[in-house]
Image (cartoon, rainbow, N blue to C red; front, top):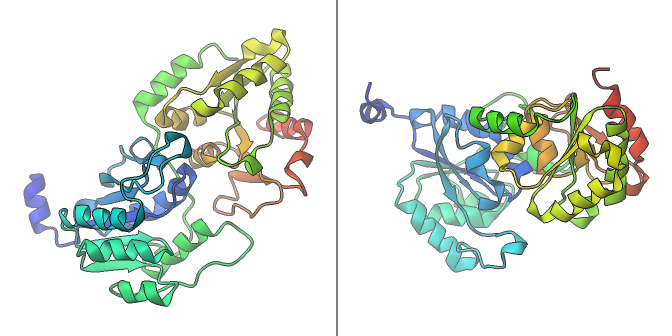
Length: 341
């Protein structure tokens, strides 16, 4: 049946889903619930409204549930040194007017923030669903059910999204996040990693905040221990960590360096593909470790004394301590080398 005719006979609502948060890991956590919303939408698809900083096109743009990706340019990365076009009151109004042109029937707001509800109202979208955790947000949404905001020991972002999805019947229990690897990205990554010994381990050395950073010395010691065992090590980060990656390489015995590779220039799609090839992923609390767990790679995150990550207890393991610096590289190496031995 032609697509135009299919949509003409599909009475499900034209839907947009909105992600409040601005990190790649945040998108990973929400993907399973976005898929479920799309199943109840016209054509089995939903448009995704998200910050450019989450790299949505590379993480999920190839998945069949994604109808369109709409940039909500509110909080650019600090190094960009620019003002987001949807920043401030005027920017929010601009976003609303842009969405109005698309004539959505429904918007599903994965957020506790009232201002996103104002955007939906300005867009004149008739059905506006959101968490409703404040009285003002409830006034701006079309109807419930509402949820109570999570206040437990874990990071609340995933917990709130789960409660919201369950309340509206898109699922009946938490769904572990998952990602789909792009075949063409996998081919590129396999060629790039061809010279490394197997098995391979990914070290996610980047961090969005200094308090999440385990440290150059710790990563260098961990890389050396894994390489000494004859395994391959892939240092995965963004361009901002290029100098750190090179410094780690320089601190490893020259005889072992051929077992290490620094990848700081790959695309996000290639990071997803690379993680699917690893025996383990070990790293800071950053998007990379969330991606690794979402493709099924056993993952350990150096968390320290911070709130827990409870969305995937079988694949994503937490290394906690009174201080982040108390997590010892030799202990982490034993964990990595013990996997699949």
